[in-house]
Structures are given as structure tokens and as C-alpha cells.
Amino acid sequence: MITFLAIVHIIACLGLVGLVLLQDSKSGGVFTSQSSSSSVLGAGGAATLAQTATKVIAALFAATCIGLSIMSARSEKSVVDGAIPTATVPAATTSAPVETAAPAAPATAQPAANEKK
Image 1 (cartoon, one colour):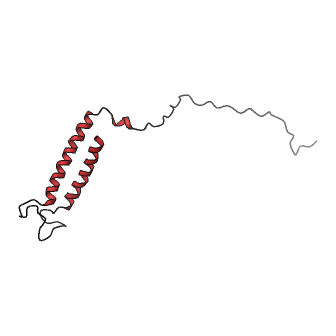
Image 2 (cartoon, one colour):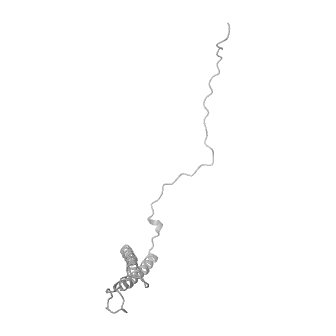
């Protein structure tokens, strides 16, 4: 149920953003025309279709906000419960690693090349 409500919430959010951007501003905006024939009831004082749809979508958006808030408060799961566990890194040891010494080569006396006999 929470997933369905979240999907409706996102759709309402995108619809609300789109409707607000399409509406005319009070002082004349990008989409302003000389005659306004898109009013719902015809007269200049009546709300336009975009304004009415914005009010409906805003009410739906507020209802889904409240519904999601109530449902998430009643949920027993945490957000962290669904997280993927990460690989554990072994703890570093405090002692330095032991290095093994290479066996010493036997000391042999080699005659010098320039040595006279």
C-alpha cells in the first residue's frame, strides 16, 4: 500500500509542477494571450481550468503527504533494514609483521685477479 501511495504522490508532484509552470502569471507571462477563453464558467471572475486542476492536484498531493507520513510512522521496519550489507574488513593488528631474514651466504675467499703467484 505504501508503494502505491508513493507512486500516486510522485505523479501528483510532477503534475503539480507542470500545472504551475503552465499557468499565466497575474501580470502577464510567457503564455499570456489577449483573450482568455479557457475559463471554466465563462466569466472573467471564474477560475480557469488550470487553476481548478491545480487546486485538486494540490489537495491530492497534501493527502498523499499525510498518508505517507502516517504509514511510515506505523511501520516497524527501518530504512537501514533494507540496506545491502557491505563486506567487512578485518581489523588491523597492532603488532608489526614479522619479517624472515634470508640466510647469510657463506663467506668464501676468492683470489684476486691481479694477484701474483
